[in-house]
Image 1 (cartoon, rainbow, N blue to C red):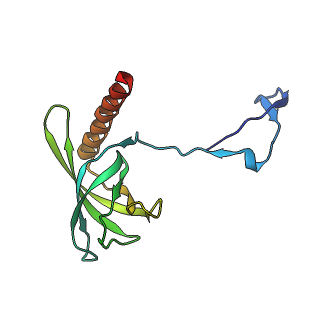
Image 2 (cartoon, rainbow, N blue to C red):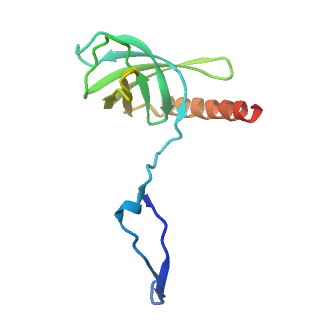
Image 3 (tube, rainbow, N blue to C red):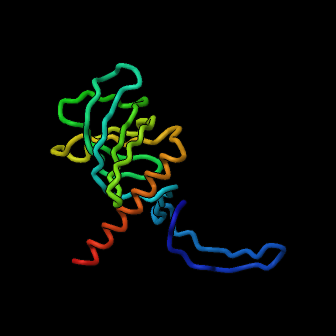
Length: 155
């Protein structure tokens, strides 16, 4: 999906009404990323395990989370593949005080370091997540979004 500013230069009526618009050039197009789920910044305790034995299991925290995936920090010195799949264990601390445990198989979408001094990050996409677990993750994200909104309104 793209967004851009333009002008309507004409129109025609027929079976389907049509508007003619002015093309201002590709450099004016802005790509809009559409997500299926709301993504919130949150630090969720996470355990990462290999599907095979590509690396040693480790614990870390997420940077953000959605019903479709997450981004996480890769600890210094930790080996981690650039592609493939991993098992992820999330601990979601709900507002009710309950702790919810979610296990999900993830596809490694991207491993990168945004700045030279920053820690490495991995973007993961949830695969075959159980529908009930996905609902728990989405519920957690909405609760977290409400908490962040309240904090920003208090400032």
